[in-house]
Length: 378
Image 1 (cartoon, rainbow, N blue to C red):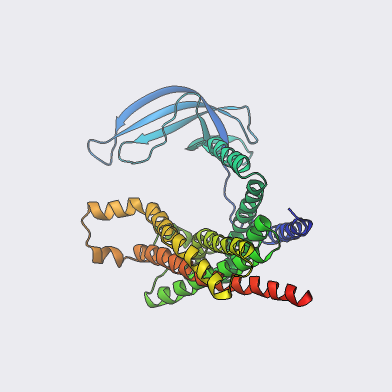
Image 2 (cartoon, rainbow, N blue to C red):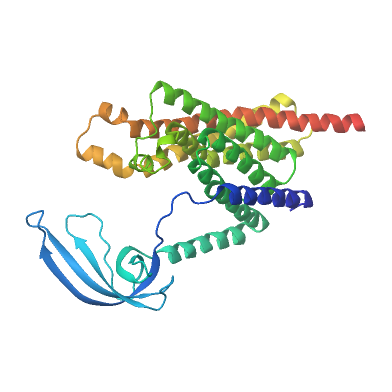
């Protein structure tokens, strides 16, 4: 990694940190769960429910030991309910680690505890560590750079973009700004300050912006509300919910969803064209563009499938539900939620397609201009 890249990376990280300290404060104060360990299931009794005939509720009386928080080390007896009518219940066994919400009195003494979830984060951390390790083993220095760019992307979204949206800032402008910064940082750190990176940055930015413009136009024409999902409806109920631009949030989601695939296509084309130019310095501008387009066409089909399959995979439960209840195709595609997902997948794919000619034209122009300037100097 060059000195310029390191300096640039440090400046941007410091900028993000500054933004996070100013804007990233929590707006909603919620009680935080503490960790506990199941020491013993004291009793487990099954009883009939009073609200549904033939249904049962299992009541577990559990002894927990707090493993975090102000009451760390203390033991607590809690009740855990397993309802046969619920599709999802929290079933625990001795030795399980759980998250617990504590109800306290004015003096800070525990009145009651509720098990809210099984602790799973340590297994997710193991998975992340394996992922990072494989990146380094297979990719070497490139793998290390990939980890850096992933951390920057996560920081930009979680500590800058989302807190600012909660503050009431326009999600459209935020998503565009964050995307361009992420694109520039990712490609410059991975490839360094060179014509290949600049061509990919312009190509990716162009493709993502086109995807965003298509989303805005079709969203307006199709009257998409951005409130088609249950999560969006829940978001509208929080104190800031009335001021949220839900159409803008839908736009932001589509931009971020398309970003990775579009960046991959743009860098692949720019890199291939760079190698072709190095191997054949005398290649004409027209031939170089044609080569870049051919590379892009080969990538286009699989990447479009990648986007569409990714969004389809995320909606598989919903699609199964519609099929099970024998909804017609007309009913399905006219629902706000489904129409939003279709726009999300197709707008991203169209942006990806436009990335190919944009990157090919920009890369060809940059490569030939540099070569011409070198000849003039000679």
